[in-house]
Image 1 (cartoon, rainbow, N blue to C red):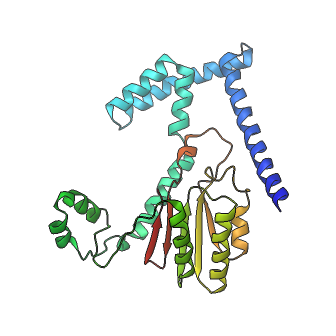
Image 2 (image 1 turned 90 degrees about the horizontal axis):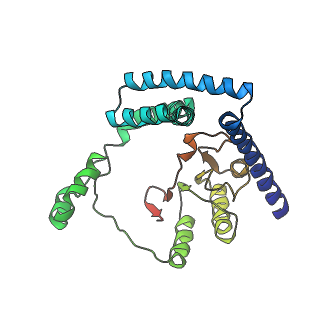
Length: 264
């Protein structure tokens, strides 16, 4: 098991690194090579630079952003143009934004939750009134009958974490930047398997970059095969693109809508 796990990890890393190196070599070829093909490619990029400058000028954006990008493109046409295209012309980014908007519209009715402790919170914590108002505006008003406990260090947190998982009756939602095979995750996974057998809905989401050196590529499918609903946030693809910087750094577990465990 350990050997096949390591082989799957190694194979994925080698493939990704190889493809990224190929792309870097291509860019180096454009910048440094003096062959006819490289010169043609550089000429094409210079023409694109001119169109990009006109596009940025006509675009509705902050003037400071326009000045910075145009300055960079005009001073370094090759580098500036490629960098601008890398950050601004990504269909996957636009699709992602549209999907987030659609999800927000679909669930908007769930955002306006009725708080029950706004007035008493003003009285008991006047120094935090701006934060209380902001939370209400964001759809997270303050409530009565709640309790918060600070669990530190991790040796204190982990046993309580496991006990709360065992109490789950309806659902468990786990969202983490990093999940790694080992004693801690195996202890959690054993409980999740047990809960699945008890018809408790278990949902897991983890970040692909965070687990790049920790989990094999098909790990989400492995969890699905045992009844755990699993999604990989922003799967990493071996393409030089700024969207890879969009990562899920959350470390949250929610149980039955009654208990939430958050890690810094």
